[in-house]
Image 1 (cartoon, rainbow, N blue to C red):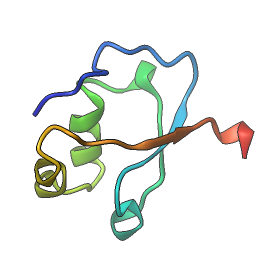
Image 2: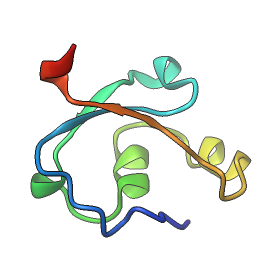
Image 3: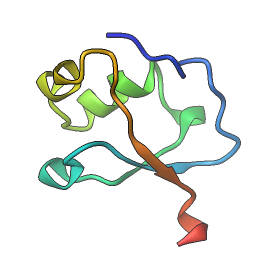
Length: 70
């Protein structure tokens, strides 16, 4: 599993919505300051199937937004 943005620092928590995320309870709030590992690892810990990530063969993208922007 690779995460091109694994070193990206988000200055505040963001909502994360992976492809078909609604099936697995997404979007969910991601706070990099409180989580260990990469965002992809976090997605799997939060219930998103690794098989869905693998399906995209390195071209996996999520939607992001700040909750206060809603």
